[in-house]
Length: 457
Image 1 (tube, rainbow, N blue to C red):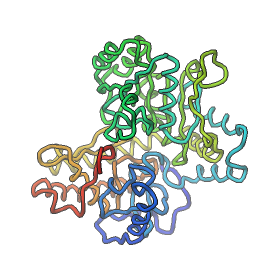
Image 2 (image 1 turned 180 degrees about the vertical axis):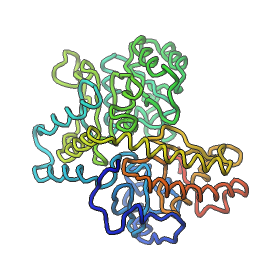
Image 3 (image 1 turned 45 degrees about the vertical axis):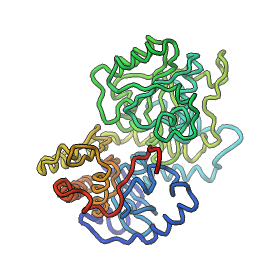
Image 4 (image 1 turned 120 degrees about the horizontal axis):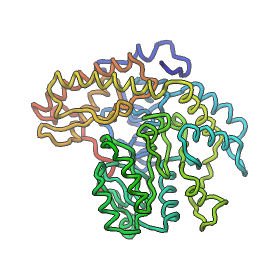
């Protein structure tokens, strides 16, 4: 199954994708970079898209996309992975979604009272995820933070337990205070969040024992790089219930990728509250908080509890974004989107694993996570995780026409795209192996990339 996007240009992207190093000009990208840093802190509105996350010799600004292919402002073509920071599951410019959004725009984008499409979108999403109620917003942080606020109000407790092995939950103070970028976050706020390790049930119970009757909720992803031990997720749910806390499952990444009902459906569990985003509208800005009726209603008008200002955004009911959401949900319902993603990811993993084995570098470069969301790990000759070697791999893949901060596929990645990627990975890892033998510095053009969450530049 190959999802249909907008009409294909004269040269098919799959045929045109470069698979060998090519000399590219980034003149317009460089000019925009200089201007952007004068206007925008960090030069981008999303940290993960910042210049420090990519090699210096790489595209800096994109102009258009089609399927899994994208063209930068200098006209260079690339195959993208993790496109739209994992939000574009159907491919760039997926025609039914674009058509739905375009049809909604002439009718008005926002009104003083709710638009009928808000009910339609709520019914569409809830029919997939199997929760009682939903509240739309624009990005995942809003949804997760609303879940924390509702949990605190519902339980009358103030401490939040978060999984330390899952890297990001929200831009808000309660979570950012736990990271290295905690400047500006009051210490009192930081002290209200405690951490536990994934797959460590005794460690979670130890927190409940250390903070008796104080933990409002446990916030985590179903999995991120490490699979849950048998029965672990249900045991977390049971531990929360036993200790009077709510279980909040962050499905911003896993939702509509592990399963059309989210990772909760894939693993057969049901959280009290859950957040969705990214893949909800194929790149349009839609997120949602879903959950139990009795908890969600405390942020509404029908609860006899003290009211909670849970989630209220001017643009949460934006009509064309919700139209895009409905069209995306329809694709999930009528096409084997998730199956296509898993099969493409498995084809990619199999090809890369064969190359890694043949080069005998499996201790230094390897894949983790499910086929639907592959992440690669880069280690140096000493076996330590290495940003320099990550940069080298990114650099070599960019040279061959691939932008891959991860190897997360969309349903628009065809077998031809995957096979070309495997070929490029093979060539790039040959360079990687030489760097393991000779040192990475002679092979790098420019400075290494850096982690997003760091205290200083």
